[in-house]
Length: 308
View: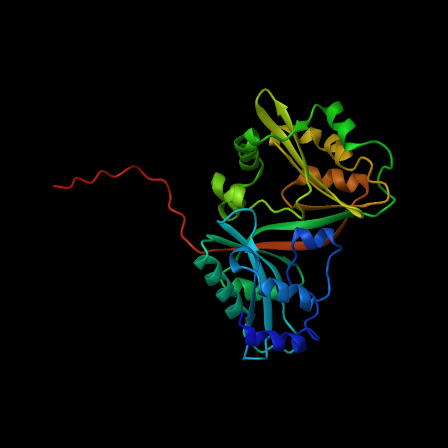
């Protein structure tokens, strides 16, 4: 973004509407939020390697404003927001391809985004080289419908869960590999470094627990508890689907007057079933897309080169 673009953002903000992309941060903040000029000016002035703002369109007449940055590590980036006014004439697929090139220049090998099912951006992203990684559904339990008593800590003790430790990383990666279909991992991350770089979190305040059975992690839960919402994720080993209902009781313990939220991939059938039996409603479907900037090199036998 150039300094000359800043003046144009004033006019742009009047017709930009809401972001076409959804992050977990926005999910926990209540979904679609209005365009914030000050927020994007702040992003524009920050380092692009952390969270940059990109503007496309004629000088002083921006037509697309996007913000992107790293997910958890340098290998995986995601588009955090994308604003396009109804009267935009610039080709959206060209703008998305430009973002992919910028991310690649910064060292990313994957650029991710989450698009609502009914968004017109979906087709443009596919034209720009993005492919579908997975389909996800946003499940919500309204405030007042969750249990008002109990606590996560007491439930974890009862279920034999313990706090996640740094030494659990590789075991959790093996859990991810066992519980995630190969076709999803192909785009979302096949290696440990890719997986670690792509773990998305709505905030820094997180409680993480694992179900450890003789050195094997059979379940991993993450809970992000704010003043108004409780966002959570449950990942279980295929051999431990029967533990999902009790794990769900654990993560919603004490939710009370908070809105309980989870974004669940469609292949997590046991989790979806437990959520629906608990009274959660599926309110929105998202397509998680990824653009790969470098071709993954398949492991081959070592080649010995003799130099005379």
